[in-house]
Image (cartoon, rainbow, N blue to C red; front, side, top):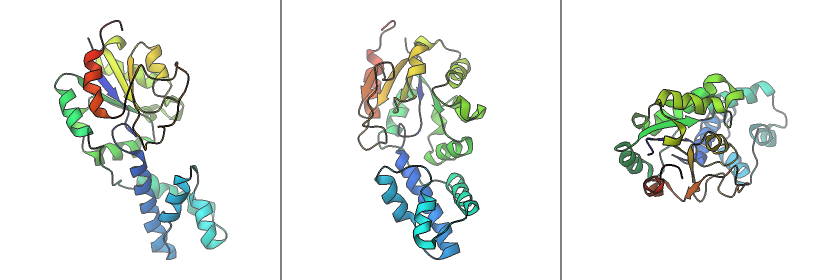
Length: 227
């Protein structure tokens, strides 16, 4: 019998792009205060064309010609340290309330530790989860798909893997280790999220798939021991 559900955070419980845009707005406000022009619109346009990594440098160069690396590092710090303006997916609060009546709920998420803590605080859903595991507690080398955060989550739950389901969105890293450890896995493949179009080999995909969190209770009911 399933006793606990472990959730990823980004693009599983809230839209990750909302955090990105919130961070861009914070950076743009800092640039406007110091240099007199805004850049969040340009950053968003680059992001929406699929560009990743350091977008601050190319955008600032269009205005300034040259950019000091130290200033870019300052803006990266603003991005990571800002208090995000984000909210859960519309279906998240009710689903979490429903699930919490029958299952223990936990979070296991990658990302810089201080950033992830601020995200969870901003979402105001942290009371549903115990434990909360951020893999960055042990450093970048232990981010998913490393087994340590999964093992630690199971240890804190005091449960066997076969009684636990992991819910995430990113098949590149979310499910392969959980499945090897004999957990069941559910992929939330919601249109508009960053990894919606990613399809990998069966080893990396989840056991089950749903288009939103509202499909999870029925999936949990359908999972029988030994499936």
